[in-house]
Amino acid sequence: NAGVTQTPKFRVLKTGQSMTLLCAQDMNHEYMYWYRQDPGMGLRLIHYSVGEGTTAKGEVPDGYNVSRLKKQNFLLGLESAAPSQTSVYFCASSYSSQGGMNEKLFFGSGTQLSVL
Amino acid sequence: AQTVTQSQPEMSVQEAETVTLSCTYDTSESDYYLFWYKQPPSRQMILVIRQEAYKQQNATENRFSVNFQKAAKSFSLKISDSQLGDAAMYFCAYILNYGGSQGNLIFGKGTKLSVKP
Image 1 (tube, one colour):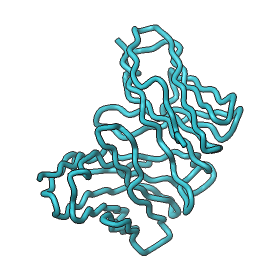
Image 2 (image 1 turned 60 degrees about the horizontal axis):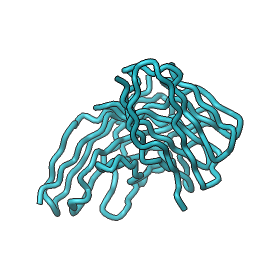
Image 3 (image 1 turned 180 degrees about the horizontal axis):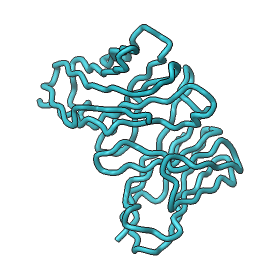
């Protein structure tokens, strides 16, 4: 049982390049999320999905797009990378949308992205 | 605005001793969940402990316990018998308990805990 898997783990981009981060979960979770973590900051929500075929904006969505074509996968895209998008990106999944007695957010191990 | 404040950027504790990490939060809602997450150098986010706001009893998980003061909007984490493996960044977070929250965990900026042998 792999849990939440993120690929790649590290990436360096030049300004203006595009890339896609892949998140895969094998727990049959309905909800998936993309967060970014900047130095000295907690995690901030970029986009999320409440089920296959759905996406919605979080706190800091500008410059990113997402897709959830399959329930187990949640893709985060950067169409034209900027230095301000240098960050560590975390994917997470959960059975339902909020903390409760029987569920929690499961996090991937993060992707370190540097934009030069 | 919903915020979480961790006033201690760094803390240090001697192995086997007890340390308390502070957290205050700001929300006008009454129903929510509070969390402490641990992030070791591996970057993995690990849930340490969870508290339901409607419960007065403080949550406990082995050596980890919280002091939840709802009126004061305070949620501190106590680590007893500190171990070298407890060294990590600790994040306090909360989420509102209604359908529209959609997993928007609000995080503090973290406290870096060092454990001295």
